Each structure stands twice: as structure tokens, then as C-alpha cells.
Length: 180
Image (cartoon, rainbow, N blue to C red):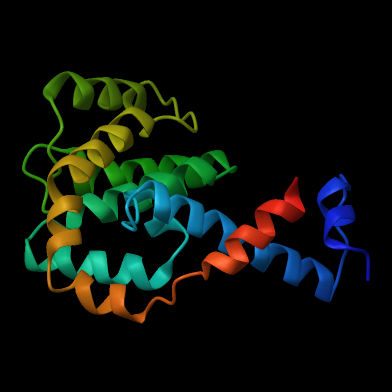
């Protein structure tokens, strides 16, 4: 196997077991550095990479009757990845009916001009990948400011925090010297 230093220098990473070890090492180093910078607290964006964290946050939102925010964010991300125009049309209409339409069952907190811009593009039969991007960012901001801090302080988050194994300082120190 090539040395760690060579792996970092290569533009194309090696395959097989070395790649898995490399990815794990990079992931652990990144998590440790972010945790140190953030005081050990995960960020809202971590829900996209960590299933257990996403599930716990979803449960917390259900308790607060705010689950539609997370559902909308995930639906908007899925929509943005669609390639087929007919699938985009169908998904856009579903998202609008479910989350954006006045009186919707799972209505999210968006201002009227934003809803009208989405409605206008849908009525003009325009389905760009960023159709819900502005509203997704606004909902993420609402969750980041209002709901995420409550979740971090909640009892729902505390058991999750205890399950995580911290990266040793020895590994962190060793990995930063290898990367240099």
C-alpha cells in the first residue's frame, strides 16, 4: 500500500481497502476539527450526512409539530436532482400543493412574494432545478436559528451525544502532521 503522504498527494485516490481507510481517516479528521471549532456541537447541515442525527432531529421536530420544515428541505433537494422534465413537473406540483399552497396540510412559513414567484414559474411551465432553492434556504435558516439550538439543548440530542466516540487528540495530531 502507498504511504499516507502519497495518498494525499495523488489527484486520483487509490481503490480498495486503502480508499476506505483514507476516507475514514479524512472523515474522522474533518469531524474532529469541526467539533473543536464548533465547541463539539454538530451543525444543521450534518443531518444530510448522518442518518442517526437526521432521525433524532426529525423526532424532535415531530414533538414540536414542525416536521414539515425538514420534509420540505429533503423534498426540495430531491426535486433539484431530477433530470426528467415530466418527473420535475409532477414533483414540483406535489411540493407546491403539500407545502406552499395557502391552506396546505403541511404549510411552511414562507412569505407571499416567494410563494407567488414559485407559483408563477409553475404556471408558466418552468421547472428549473433551483425552483425551490430560495425557499429551501429560507426554511433552513429558520431551522438553524429557531429549531436547531433547541434540539442541541434537548434531551433528544443528549443520548446521541453520549454515543459518539470522540477522535483522540493523538490521531488528530498525527493526521495533521501527515497531511503537511
